[in-house]
Length: 320
Image (tube, one colour):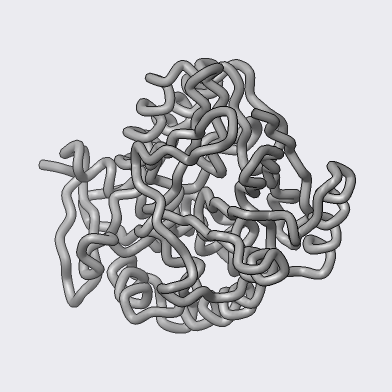
């Protein structure tokens, strides 16, 4: 199985996104890049350099539905005469914008985010959502854990690896333990657990960090020999990355718990203290809130802190 990385530009601070061409029948792209003129041209050029074009693509598989990964899916699908699109059923970014629904506002209210701050973030993400074309429910098929994505000479097995998003998926070639994992594991960045409604109950919050740690352990159990991430270089020493991630998460847990006092703090308070340089930048502010909520949820689930709700806002205090 020939896996060819293609580096596609994005307008985001994270830089280029990695798209993977599986040059085997049926010709498949894993992720596609954002819907920009520059990204579309870079993808065309990358395919052309490998002797193929949009029209040859038969299948588009999405690791997750963030704009830098899924934005061009509809355009490629249309130019390829209805190539199949596959994404996990817990993803929503290909359906609507990241802060577009009422449940997103409720999550931010619970985190103590001021209404005027939410309004600014929502406006920013309305612009970002233009970097992907929405799909209707009938325009994609669903990925499932354990599903085999078949090719002429082998298969990729789907591993549901929630955390960065609820429906994030990784794909492993069992024959040589090669892994393609989107933003679940990155060489130079610790992935951000994004605040999301729980896909099984939108009135609840998805416990992103707890789920992410389970996903990391799941990937570790596969003993991957080569890991292709959504950004940056391939990884040949998964164990080193795993241990680095655990140290970073443990250190942040200590910092978050240290911010919580007996008087009570909100996730918004924690975000402002933990990320003072990011809190005035719209996208970074959302990521700071997501990170803070994820760590507060994890600390509360471990009985290291307590939470109570007052007027719809969660306040965290030192556990008694």
